[in-house]
Length: 175
Image 1 (cartoon, rainbow, N blue to C red):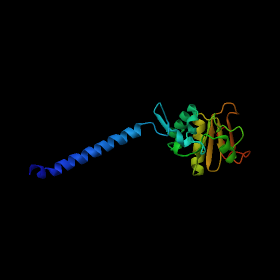
Image 2 (cartoon, helix red, strand yellow; image 1 turned 120 degrees about the horizontal axis):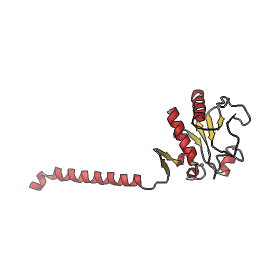
Image 3 (tube, one colour; image 1 turned 60 degrees about the vertical axis):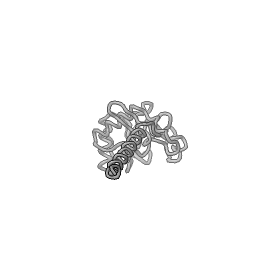
Image 4 (cartoon, rainbow, N blue to C red; image 1 turned 180 degrees about the vertical axis):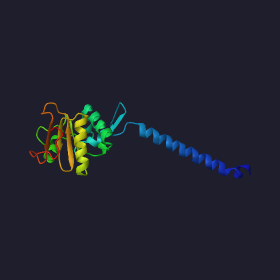
């Protein structure tokens, strides 16, 4: 008789135990190594999968760490979600050819020293360009809907160019 009267207590305890156990396992799985690697340094946590070449999962791990820090600084300066706006990061040779990239593109692996960032308006694009210069980018490509940033020191510095290739940049932060 006492068991029947306290059945709701046992059901409640059992339910609570299942929920707590499920929460524990969900936490453990979230902390285990996932298919994406993150960069954690000086308060910066970045999911490298946003930089992956579409044909090689995990390829975004090659991105230059100095570039990552500069992108973080750009995000802080502009208050834009830069890492959510990455159009292109690392590129395989095949993907670089497919998108019409330069043969010596700074996007290509293993260098991984360039990104293209989506710019949904002219104002955002122009803000990105000027702020990129302020945080130390010395090579900036300016498209209508994106901004190319790279840190390839083996190429000309303090330059801005437009797209299609060979056109004058719509905004040049170096003049």
